[in-house]
Length: 332
Image (cartoon, rainbow, N blue to C red; front, side, top):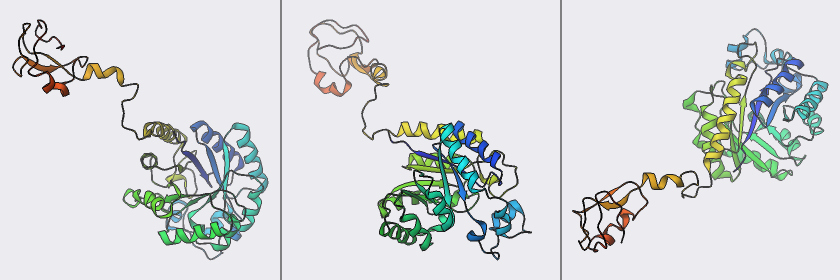
């Protein structure tokens, strides 16, 4: 059974508050996620002072400030990230943070994380991809807003510069994503076209789509969560609360087990029911020794502990070796 990696995306839902970030680590651990993921950035190196907010950000945080001003309220310090990494180790959950600028890559490289999580917005950022690739660490890359050629170009940059272990996450970069825009089938189109492991980074409301992605073969699932959907901030309303996150994790673990090995054969749990549910050839009425078995004096009924009805024509025309009462299982 393949273990699906579940990333609980805290993102900036800590609202720049370290204690809130620690509580999010606890919630992700309690929900059963494999990793809790944050975002590391220097706002002035991430966005220009002229950059506007996305429309969904204007809806959730207002339109009276720039994207830079919004992000400046959502940062944590380097010491905060070091403490969060240590706290994750203490409670037993993997720590990941996505870098959004070159200095953050240099800083996070010292953390010895299991993999880099590259966000959709950096897929077309050549200097960023080169810096990530030179670390030769595994990459999990979201592909929101991309077409297949842009993903291929990013892979070529990563591989040329030293990173070959790449998992691609299908993604739609809208918060929340309308169900009709999910296009979940594209996940496996990416896999088939680019020959990489695939997963899914979800921005829909609810837990159904990540679960469906696992059933379709996703090896990694990423999902935003928050401690309170009503808090101020850009991503809270498109995030799961801790209870929903736990429900998603439980459902994914169940689906993970249910996928199985693909061989169509009876399972050990159902073997005991074969005799109960299947049928045998039985006497349709009393049959005397020496009578010929025919379609008139035979029928099929449960239980399935006798001769299989698939042997019907092997039994028809044979001679009864003894008397059989009605409903008695036939023996040859």
